[in-house]
Image (cartoon, rainbow, N blue to C red; front, side, top):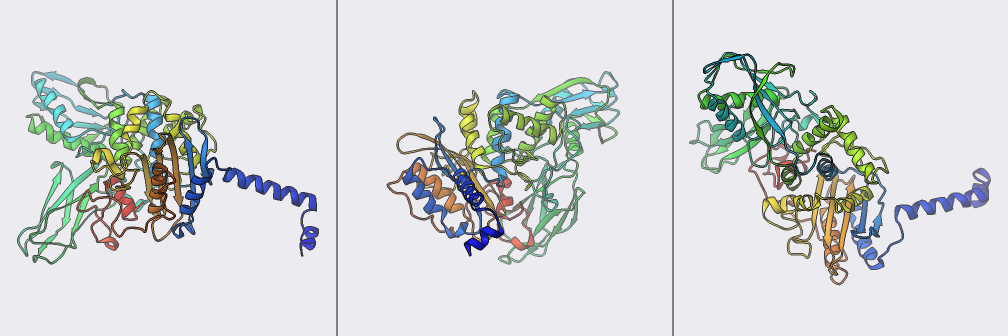
Amino acid sequence: MPARLYRRGLPLAAAALAVSLLAVSAQADNPAPADATLTADLDALLSDARLANAQAGVQVLDADSGQVLYARQPGALLTPASTLKTFTSTAALDLLGADYRFTTEVRTTGDTYGSLLDGDLVLRGGGDPSLLVQDLDDLAAKVAATGVTTVTGRVLADGTRYDSTPYGPGWAWDDQPYSYSPQISGLTVSSDAEYTMDSVQVTVTPGAAGENAKVALVPAEAPMKLTGSITTGAAGSGATADVERRRGANELQLTGSIAAGAAPVTYWETVEDPATFTGKVFEGALARHGVRVLRGVKAATGTEDSQPLVSHDSKSLAELVVPMLKVSNNGMAEQLTKELGKVKGGKGDWPTGINQIKAFLKANGLDAPAGRQVDGSGLSRYDLTTPAKMAGLMKVARTKPWFDAWYNALPVAGNPDRMTGGTLAARMRGTKAENNVHAKSGSMSGVDNLTGYVTAPDGRKLVFSVMVSNFAGTSPRPVIDAIAVRLATGPAAAPSSAPATPNAPAFAPRLKSLNAPAASTATPEGGTRWEDCETLGHC
């Protein structure tokens, strides 16, 4: 049989060469280990049945020397999910600077006569991903302090700093109502301190049995049309309540019931046309401060001839990457991507911003393999990168002047403080990885990753990247965590296998509800709104 195969295929010498090349390729995929004990331990963990039909890539480096301590398919192109935010945040810090700030302006057209502005107020967005309702209120107070009490024209909401494409390439259409998939604009507003941009909080409070439940919106000026109703059922009757935004409209559809005496439930819904939405919230703030706008709100063209009146500056970029990385804020990552394009490439769009990120990676020796990046947050399934590139970035980042701020912005394993532990707050507790591992998580249906830093028992600083794609069924997250714990613990107490997948989800609950689909009526247990999409299988 072998002779017959050779006669029908390659000559013997060519066949031998092919076998040799395959062997070289296999060695390149899985280089010779520098630490045989570590290799044996991680190989054992990666033999877990939960990875049987998945693709897993791992690389562990000495952070100082760059020596490869372990590698399993380090060059495999895998889906990064939210670990892609490490590319976006480091490029932004490097190219824009840690002290970079976003400026939102209020400008005027026309002339002012005493307390009357005969023209428009232009609310010009500067791409600030952290603009809060309170910031708009402060701007309105500043306008009132100038003496203006009447505006004969309109509030012109100007989101034209960025292009008009609201969603990233490859984003799922059925994610659009959910707060982890906001529309991206040069003018946005957030209603909470975690900068959940372009979303409205909808709180449903039960009344007496048989009555309609009360529905309250934050911000109160949100121009949302409410259709349907949520009834109050008998005490203990359970909950079927749901709130969902109709696609393409600022209309919230209310259905189902909530039991009398039950705790209020908060839903987070994205809004359509975030610039105009922000303009309407600003109009309400102006009214509270005694400034009347006679002709309402309209989208600006960006070409208006206007003069500056008052402005608001954001926190520094070094401060803003904290919520972006800790709670994996997708919207902030996309705003940074378009801002990179605007400032460094002259266009506030995804292609130009991505080119700036690629240029940063290339300048730091991280251009190969090319992979694919189409957005800033990793929400797109078009994104592909390798464990080696991820680990390489971890090493490069340590050489940068902004590293300390960035390192401290990464989630810390097992730390219960929300703005310390972030997405890792409930992971690896009670192990040597607790308060040791600083890493970015990233997951969506069929994908789970962890990339970051750990200090070994001998004091060595290690960087690691674990990427798992294409699994179905039981989550391999315990395997990923076991790898990080092994790096933190050393060989003495290394487990021979990963713990069983816990019945409870990985993160402590942050919200009562995230508008879960009918198929997932149980309360979602995701630790952040941004990664609840993973718990619900929505991204």
